[in-house]
Length: 570
Image (cartoon, rainbow, N blue to C red; front, top):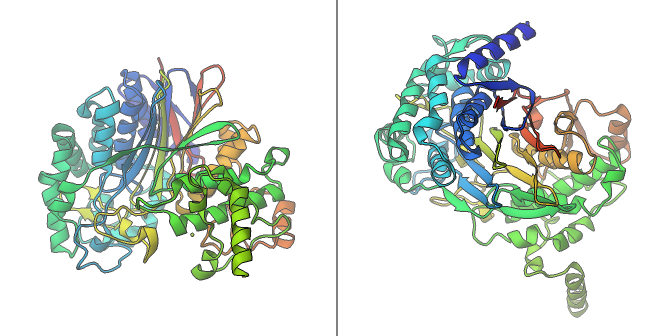
């Protein structure tokens, strides 16, 4: 039955595109490739490449299409971060994270519903990317998404599974969640064709009128009306004053490979810190399933995510230079015991004691300089759900972007007359510290779209994944699997994953590791383990592109989320 549905889906994807594109789980091409969480979205981007668009054009088309075919994971009511690396060497980050309402006087913490909504950033971010680094018009790149919403697409198992898990949320929506995403109050089934005419009209309006349609015009009116009638905080002023921000990406290196990743307030610095710590160990002599390697990376991730919670956020005073310093990594490396796991605590106050001090490592300060200074001071004193796509074109321009609504189906609210699912990003703020809630502030998350270059500056791979707290562990394992262990990109993605995170008191282990490895982690290193099935969606759904030495691009869609790659045929 699954094979029949897969064939049916492929047939519909082929028929969906009006241009010659090829779609598959793993795909090679010299004309560019798109890897995304859904084959329709990948085909939408490949269609733009076929029409002569560049990687940014294709990425924007893919992003809008993902909002149609994966509306539960991203869309017009959400947020994201995009990393662009142009063939001329220019690297750019676009922060289109959502922002807290400007007036918080009536705010009460809520995990779903209107009070959980931040001002969406997707529309402005994608339009900014297109206008500055794309080559096509907004109407051209949005056409595939509009066609999908109008003509429909075949629902796969992932869509139905997420829909089923969120049935009550949609059924109880104060807006139009039930009427748009349920069938007469019931669930759709795998193989059904789903059309979204109300979202199609919204997309057409944005394609015609641009960002103002969303942030100042008819759509803004509908969002404000829904919010004011249902106790939400987003106003016309919030929408009018929202702007995506062009930033410098965070750039580091791992064993000579250049890592171009996402800036604050998301997870790029934390990813680099973990890799810098791991770089102190010669893990290439180990293997992906060696308990020692798993232990070392788990501890590096644990320490770096404690630092993330302590220092990172939408704050100009985040000590990024120190966090990504190789010298600072030496001080964190020193904390890892080789024969046992660091004790995990459920108490934030206990975990806080393990935070480092990256402020000591700015302006090129060295590890041993700080050690000597500390010794002197001691003598005197005696005494821490989402979607991703990767795109490259025939000219070598590369894009990685990760978008989210936070939870699947976000706040659970669909704005009447728009088909837009609003995010629930307000829950990602902290009670205090650099990620504390403030008017207009952007919440910290772990997303980290990343582009990796070879030592000679040529593209190696474009990587990223959804998965909340699993994002950083999955990305670091992808990078290590390719660079240290020499695996192909598809093998690196499909190998079992594990996750270590500051708030986890256990180590999450995906099925597929040898039993001997599991027993050593538990009985020798002392980890509490939580075991998951093989290729479990819990560990994210990376969608990646790899460039081979001969210039051929290999795109791979997620194995855990029915992703796909698509490429133009010429």
